[in-house]
Image 1 (spheres, rainbow, N blue to C red):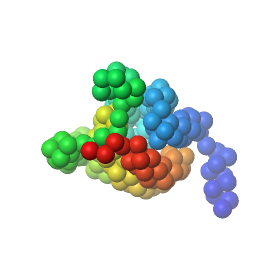
Image 2: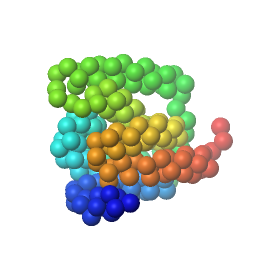
Image 3: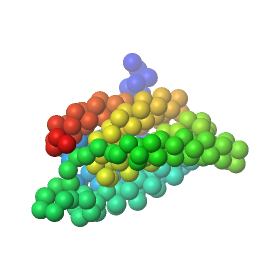
Image 4: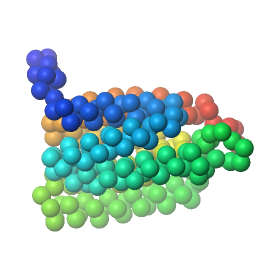
Length: 198
């Protein structure tokens, strides 16, 4: 117990900002609030710093991608995907073909990225880090498109990243992703309730 208290008292302020902005971002996403995207930008910028310090280069790449996808999602939720006359972008399902294509892309990209970081850099946990990164690429794109399946992918990512960050000693981010586990389930349930039956 004293180790937890010591860790809480010695939290890096940058990591704490990542923890808070990450939680607020997902809470807003569950509520389908468009402010999830500007808060997500703060989280992504902070994460670039944290993961660079920890030599988790695939996560750095992912955080840069989050910057871009938060901008895309912000635009898409406001203008890009709303049916004519609709106030908000509706929650929908990804098509089976697009889902299969994403699965193949994630598998191939994980192997290639893992190999690159393992053989060409001093990266730690290169393949595990790459797997969570490529899955997160897919999940963030699905989030921006408001596909309900994004929550299932996030759930898998959250389990893996909680373990990785505990192993790396980044306790605030481990806590964040542990809380994300519950939030992913809540998000999936909440979004499913708002879906219009096909």
